[in-house]
Image (cartoon, rainbow, N blue to C red):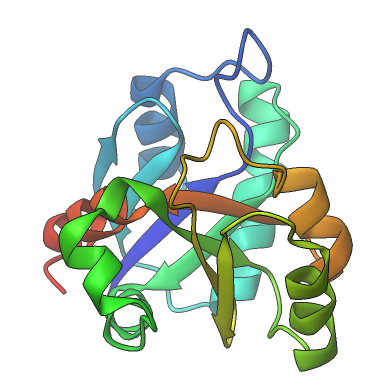
Length: 179
């Protein structure tokens, strides 16, 4: 079975530095196969493992801390789950016309509607948020870097940790996973 794993907050201004070759070697050392990375931001596709995605996350987090010396969250989805993230995207026009300003924020647990509403109520700009399952979709029409809707705000209001990828990266990961 193919899986996609995203690491949270790696290779940011010298924080949690990890080489992608080291990440691939970590997965191979754990018995996974076909490990491929995408970009330097902690995206990896791999095969194998019959554990739940939650159990895989814990295994990878412990192994990364022990072998790579980084403390970070892993967010794992099967290729099928990743395709569902794409299929239920509530912003198809933005995905086609401006994919770099559409962010998929992958989180650990299903998002509570009240928490999504709380995040929506804090927005003072033109950003728009929708959520489905363990993914929040955020449109940043004026750019992500200028927005007041920051990762810290998102996590605080949603009540869970997460990691975001722009829609271009979401689609590239799906292509690599064959979903």
